[in-house]
Image (cartoon, rainbow, N blue to C red; front, side, top):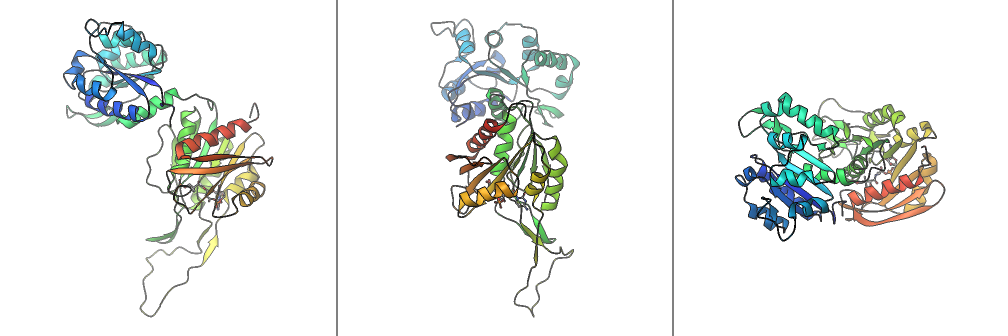
Length: 403
Ligand code: PMT
């Protein structure tokens, strides 16, 4: 469940080749539990039929102020009931009209009546987008508090290469979610680690673990949604970096230690989700180790890696809040509590690993959070993004005023 559940989103579609992507956006918003109303310009109707949006949104589509009255003032009704409004794609013409308060069609008239937060997704030819008049209009809208999602760079339908492509629908949905999320972490700097570390044996082999990065990435994304400035230090995973998060890519425990320790002084909240390899091969061969026919096996000597969390615990200032994670196969509470003291933590989020619904790789997790004052609270089994929000709720609940 996300913040979109039960919300009403008004989607404006204007006449650009990317109008077809708005169809997928409706599907994603509905899947997330939002209700959707659609307003289209006459030019948009030349690219995608009204029926497609009507079927997917399960609502009448506003295209004309005079014919779509539905027994009431439909465009005012949808403007009044929306919790968020988005125009995707937004043409240069639509951007200009909105910037200057013009309302000469159903879409612009509807949007002029919107009091909810608005996201504009401009999409057009690169030269049009870079035109000083279009940029000036976008600046005007931004100054008025309208959110702008910059277009992607790429090859456009007109074969121009440059900025102008409408971003993917999942990204637009992500930014609508961000717009609707309460900013209770505004002004905070949050440093998060995620994923495994990978300790090379030779150029082709390594020692590592099963961390997928899902939990750490969810924490970073949730903190960004809640208004924090977030830095994510990540080991090698196959996930896309969360939008709006400054992401630093590392490989080994030593890389991660350097990345975290050089950034921790600027952080208010530090959350060490990464599954750091406790051991690394005592030496890394420069050339691939060859199999030898006169040997049945080989012995690998491992040495202990530095404990990054412990080093951060020793260095942390009283105004910083340090969160560790504990991955346990047994004695969850006893092991987690020991780590709070040993690593000087404010809080530890403990999960069982080895099962299919929690810990490594799973899309869900179940956690017990232990605080340094000896108290604890549980997070029942839920999706990792929801768990991430619960962890941040727990942090916020413990932050002293001014910290
Ligand atoms: O990435 P996913 O597939 O979504 O899986 C999520 C997860 C299981 C990795 C995550 O929920 C989790 O439990 N992370 C902590 C994993 C871990 O290393 O736990 P630990 O109990 O071994 O270590 C305790 C704490 O010390 C952790 O915060 C760890 O990051 C830190 N540590 C450990 C060793 C080390 N050398 N340096 C550290 O900083």
